[in-house]
Length: 575
Image (cartoon, rainbow, N blue to C red; front, side, top):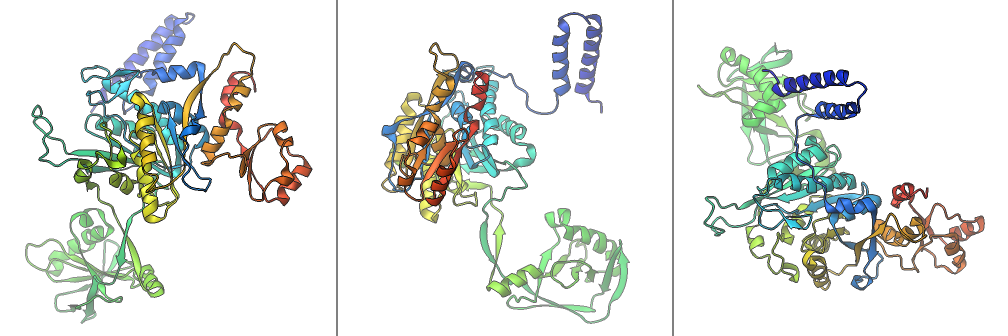
């Protein structure tokens, strides 16, 4: 079948080449080249009209920075470990996080606007209505830009989880395939969010009860989710096969096989399993169609059924991980039957595990359907805040965050909304003794960050005490009428970047930041306590005497990286 798109593209390219020959010396040639490049780049995937946001335009003339809101700091614990709430457009926050947390985030969960057309998605200060002809492309532009940065933030072992409903689920799946790679798609979790009998509206013929969570890994080869454990026992290893006669040795499709006719072998099933026993496996379903067991059955047993008759046993040599050196297969036992069984021993590694530890563990694949209808129904007062735009239950968030096998993982939510993710992280820590940290990002539309997100994190402090810093995005103009260097203006915001990257507080006592030679000279190193941390940029050089004093005091030196604002300073001509 002809590729019509390819043929059409080739004809257009031929036309462009003729135009270039006719207009070889004209200024139109660069335009033709640009069109040609676009045609050459076309391939299967998601295409949409890209839109520029106001937040993009703000960054043309301004540099986003963080400014701490001191009065909203929460210090419930003595330790110098902090979680962060970042107020402002999440694109600005993500761009700054790209400087401090590139490839450092273990888990990202987001619950973006679903774009239902019911005033749930605002684009450039206007709600997108259901009849907007560009509603999908605006949403894709909005999401695409943010997901590209999100991918940069993920650690190689990290993964992202995105809640969505049917409004944009198809578009989101294709967008994520493009951003994260189709091979990194892990699964779709189907979440029941309401009971089927719950009335929504009489206007629609169908009542949706399911939403979705797409899970993508950063690197499929490094992704290791936390699977449920269950004991691996000898319970199913209950069979013994006895060869009553020598059998007939033959070759079938290149495999050495010993054939035992009916009456030349017997099988006994014990009341209980035992470590030396054999396990029975039916060769049917996906085992028959996809597994190596099924392939052996198709290549060895099936071609011999008519010749050997019913009730035959096949000993296929050179198979198995149980040390026996063979596996037994049975052909059909009655007329008109087509399938048989395989009998195998316990793998040697499992035998060794049981003998060494007294038990063994197997990991169970996870299901992809979860019923949280009751939790969604009782969600109103969770966290002591009301939020009518997609609040998610902490039980659900705990369960999916716990898919990460690290108890000290760093969790990011850049559509923080009611703060449920932060609540879930701290609740999970309490339950399993973990030391997870969270970073939440949200705008302050209708005072949501101040009165909902932050308020919730305050409300849970008695039950789940933890430290929190509240940063707000601000801007430094790239062009200023005063003569102050941009580097000096940016220097005033380095402290926040250091705190965010190290998830700590620069308190001036145990954690001290030094930004100039004068700062260094003004510090009495001999008077510093042992075990403190100094944060110093590469352009501040320690004298040999200072280095020795620091070494003797067991002081940790952490480099303040050059990459915080290096691109901006280079653009301004200060580098």
